[in-house]
Image (cartoon, rainbow, N blue to C red; front, side, top):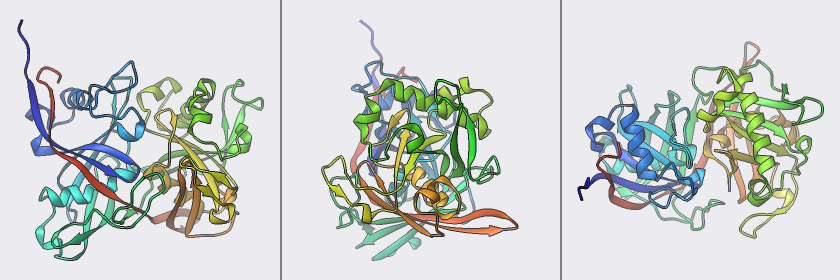
Length: 396
């Protein structure tokens, strides 16, 4: 019986923040996958193990969650004053879709380390000991990100004592700055409002609308009030992900929000863009027990946030959504800012299902319009595996 042998492609498997992904250098990909298109998408789908009707990604590198169904392609930067171009592909689990519409903020923490190890950063910019400042061009959203990568004895330091809720073991801290984080070319508030009445079908809410903050920062995000949805903001994954009606309700709201934000023309298009926009709900601070059993005290947080990614409640917080949270919290009158107490602030501590995260943003008002110069957060990253990933030769 004839068969097609597997091919092997140089790759690495990295954790960045609370996500994991398969990393490639552009030049290491098969030639027909070095350019955008069907061959590249099919290669990445097969690497990750999608589409999988069983939802397990058993025959691939994916981990059957939105946080672990990710791919990254890096190359020397095409932009002046940048070190590396970073292209992110979010792979759907049960559909043959790679969504290129947004960034992954968590994996950004691993981009600098991989770029340095692959020689994509000028060695002159990497100290023997200290911090290497890696200038990243985020090619999906055309934005600059700066990663501060610790270096010890000339190599990336991965181990350390920095603890990140949602990650089991401590590691070295990587500070990440998102410059001018308004997503893409759009306005920070695409509707011009800090709070909108978002029209939704009658079966979603009797009033036919929900209060919403629609913001483009880090990634387009829809923020809702937990109470208006019948939630407290202290929910863990099983409370949402085990409720098919709730998930369908959130997806309907997300689709209508995407239309209102100008991201799609019709709600039916939302299925092809599962990565953007994100949808989240917020509430004032309250004590709760995190997924690990850790007690989160009300006095240790400014607000509660729960966010969905790829149709499921996230186990912690997406990095890009954390940028949106930081930005919205810094601007008076948004639902996020109001949940945090309504005062002016340049940082915020929010409770998520796995614990607490602190993020910051510098917001200014110029000519009556709010802009954000940068958002800052700390993450960690670690190489889990490096070598080759194998796929059947006829899969792309």
